[in-house]
Length: 238
Image (cartoon, rainbow, N blue to C red):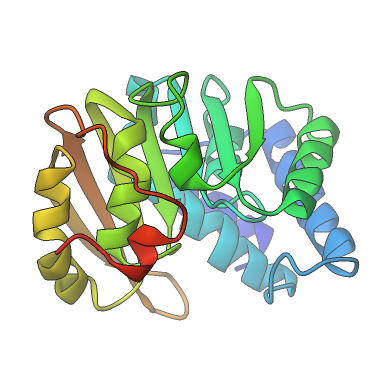
């Protein structure tokens, strides 16, 4: 997906990018490739692939959720900034918090934010399990997002404790989401969530399957969740 088709594709979905926003995406691409030579940020470095599989794919969340209706967003395990930094570029009013367990990636994100002149972005070097038990973070975000970090049952335990009551957990998944949903139903309920929407679509050009799940936080998460680091992955709620 070249830059022209990237802008055109978003325009068709109601997202118009200014010349400054397109410039920010170009800077993002250049910095991603430059830093990727020093550390492992992504296996995808060819420009058209980055624009399709990282930028467009990240922004696809906005095809099914109105980001103008929220302010505070937490992205769990964002790695090189996906999906929240492309979304921040498109919706500059958002206050973005990114939690990642690797200090090197946090270093990249801090540099990226400075170079792109992004305001109201915060980066936390922490495990999601620990971050979610801290009083300042717990149940304090309008929206919590994650993109293909772990299976949905695990992801729900990492993300739902951070969502405000009546807020939203948005999970971006590839294929096989129905099996994951079935396994995660009990966990989502225990953690205070209800499944509102399951949206399916194909990524343009390569036509690979994508799923965007909208899970509403209906009630408070029990204090015991998230459990200690590593526990959700080893023994998911069943």
